[in-house]
Image 1 (cartoon, rainbow, N blue to C red):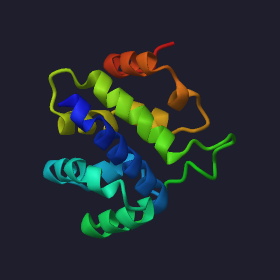
Image 2: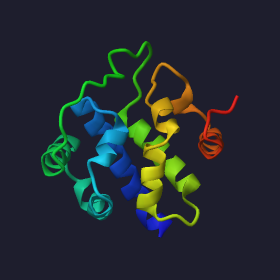
Image 3: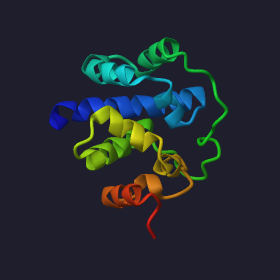
Length: 147
């Protein structure tokens, strides 16, 4: 099942980041606008939606899930090269798959995006988003960034 959903998970995580930037929300807020069944639906639709532009699909999600404009901005405050939304999507995809174990995917998506690690990854002035996947997994499991 993980292999079947690996690319779909990557797409959905990247879309979360894309919409967060577009609407100036935190990425966890985008996830929390959606119900579990909404997330499951978007995971299933990802294999079709990936053929469409991110702008088109994001506009559909924003309207469908009534995502409001926020005031979070981690892009203009970034002192370094801003990672792409696809790079951040990949970070989350790996982390979710690494910590999933016997959890359901949607449950794990919620756990990761509503944890402290999400704030750390979104701080593009730190080195967390490009840290080793094992470090991210161990930090997530410890509930704090490991030194």
